[in-house]
Amino acid sequence: MGELSLADRATIANMAPEYGATMGFFPVDAKTLDYLKLTGRSDETVAMIETYLRANNMFVDYKQVQAERVYSSYLELDLDEVEPCLSGPKRPHDRVTLKNMKSDWLSCLDNKVGFKGFAVPKESQGKVAEFSFRGTPAKIKHGDVVIAAITSCTNTSNPNVMLGAALVAKKACDLGLEVKPWIKTSLAPGSGVVKKYLDKSGLQKYLNQLGFNIVGYGCTTCIGNSGDLDESVAAAITDNDVVAAAVLSGNRNFEGRVHALTRANYLASPPLVVAYALAGTVNIDFEKEPVGISKDGKEVYFRDIWPTTDEIAEVVKASVLPDMFKGTYEAITKGNPMWNELPVSASTLYPWDPKSTYIHEPPYFKDMTMTPPGARPVKDAYCLLNFGDSITTDHISPAGSIHPDSPAAKYLKERNVERKDFNSYGSRRGNDEIMARGTFANIRIVNKFLKGEVGPQTIHVPSGEKLAVFDAAMKYKNEGHDTIILAGAEYGSGSSRDWAAKGPMLQGVKAVIAKSFERIHRSNLAGMGIVPLCFKAGEDADTLGLTGHERYTIQLPTDVNEIKPGQDVTVTTDNGKSFTCTLRFDTEVELAYYTHGGILPYVIRKIAAEQ
Image (cartoon, rainbow, N blue to C red; front, side, top):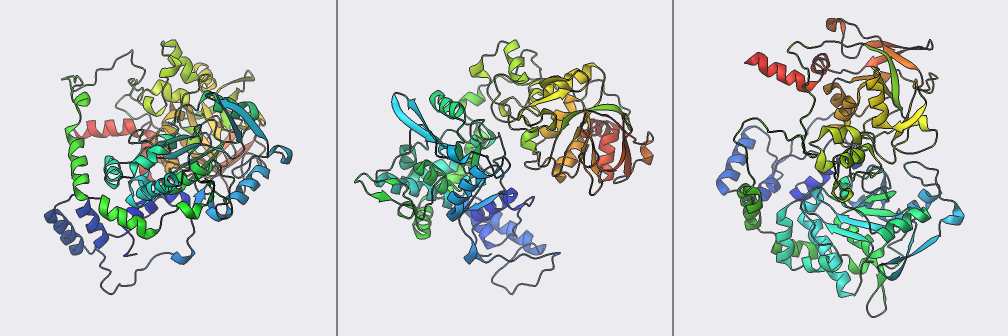
């Protein structure tokens, strides 16, 4: 442990979704202090931090004999057994060892549609789609990479992997390898410091040569902000039903998140992203098959372009310097001319612009009184959506580009916003009207109401109409009906994003009944005043014979003092069914959020009471 660099620890902590944890935690030790010095902290500051931590028994000194710590459980990891790996093609915790990537990919083509399957018929798996890319003949087939992105997650603030990726690029360029021009390549570091040490090392030019130019700093491809593929590439994928691939150094790859046209999305380290961009496909065994052909006509293998640990360490030592961090951090506080020249209102209240399609006054405090509303009955509610297992926050939250046929696009068109200016949900997260319309708008969402169809639509039960989820939700609202959601296991897994709870609340959802919840998302639902309920063990919508066409009444006590975390609650339907659920307000404070109508009114009332 004592030899693991802080950058490596940060990478491991940040990639927690891949191994099923909320986060990875490492104790503070000498390596931490070294990092503080590297990043420009003064000797006095570092000495103070060490003194404080030692005084509080929070500092680990590996030079001393270690006392045995007592934990609830232990896991052993033999570093000799660690292998290079990726995650995919649809979830971050579906790990695939590098040596098994080809065989795993081929089995994914065979498997039935699911987290590890695309159900491509055997006779179609070798199909080649020919197209013209900017006047040049081109081909694409299942597994071909069309997006290769080094993204801004923690691993792109790790000098070892960033300079490692640059060394892969250098070796490849020296041998004359190239990336196919229709592969959308990009580099979006997590910090401006990365650019400085890539420039200092002289290696950025090789990344540029392969198309990995710096496109910005911050979330890009990982959250669906890669932009459009070239029209010819998009048409080839769509017209031929190609299962195209993206390889990125992010830590989320849920369906529909990265790009609408990449059904296979693999998470990889930055050096591996470069390697797969060069190979142009995930359907490759790096041990046995060449990555490409050199300028002198020889086959080039993965081992020929992969840098050694010593090569990387040498470049890191020479290129990553404390002044880089000092200069970058100082520039942040100073801003830049464009930012500094923005006009600023002297008012302490934000001047809402009713014409803005980016920032809109939210409705969370509309008609709010200083008296909490207390428990609200959920009576004769319709089911808005009927889900199976593993509906993630990426299925729920507005993310990525705004589809031209979506309710959000219609809203923008009505305000004379052109298609080229739609931008992304992430850029418009300050407009609740856009975000409410983008909730449950994931193109890969599976709703049992649609019986095999995939997409962001549902059935308006009273009329039988098939509508966009937002349109159906508004129809229920306008008719004065409450709505609920039925779901399977692990509802809300993935990133714990606020809009996964705010969006359903704005759509009028009053309760979610699921087999189980991801814990943070469950808490977020409670924080928005939505009732989280769990089926009893061994039961779910299917075993209870629920189709979602019923109307649901949740028998919550009207006296808030009678509501207790974890109590049993009876749910009845209009066709005579009755079943018991567990109320998943797990703490008294979550119950308080609910009785206040959500965490936001709760905070306002609390502040007012203290004044």
